[in-house]
Amino acid sequence: MERTFGIIKPDAVAAGDTGKILDIIEQNGFKVAGMRKIHMSKKTAQQFYSVHASRPFYDALTTFMSSAPCVVLVLEKDGAILGWRELMGATNPDMATEGTLRKLFGKSIDHNAVHGSDAKETAAEEIAFFFAGMNLV
Image (cartoon, rainbow, N blue to C red; front, top):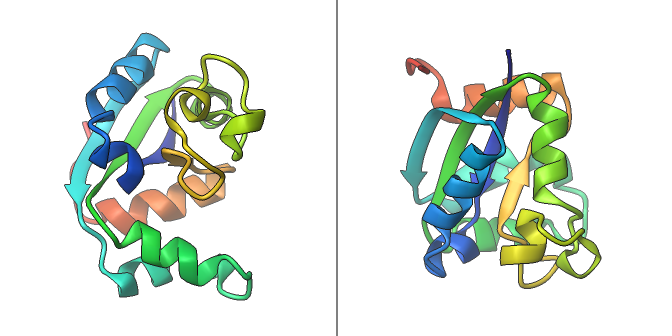
């Protein structure tokens, strides 16, 4: 069983899409091993996305991610990392495959509904960032 990390971003939470997204996640064979609704501070968003600090979109990204509540998730299933990336779809919703979360719920490349880890190491780091010291079931 593999674990990955995901976020239902502020745009999707504000639009009332959290339940719909969770339903699709479970329909695709994922088990939710951890879930928290949080409102990130700007500092937390900056720490979490520090890998992008030199990129031109960093300030807009951290401002957006700290603008309203989001839902952080630990998802489990065989092949969870690749499976979650496929279910999310392309970063740009206009280029995402029909039926993917970003195609269904994303509004733009900047407001694309969900985030997901891209590798085992990243998943472990991101899970530890938001779920340190918590029991995952």
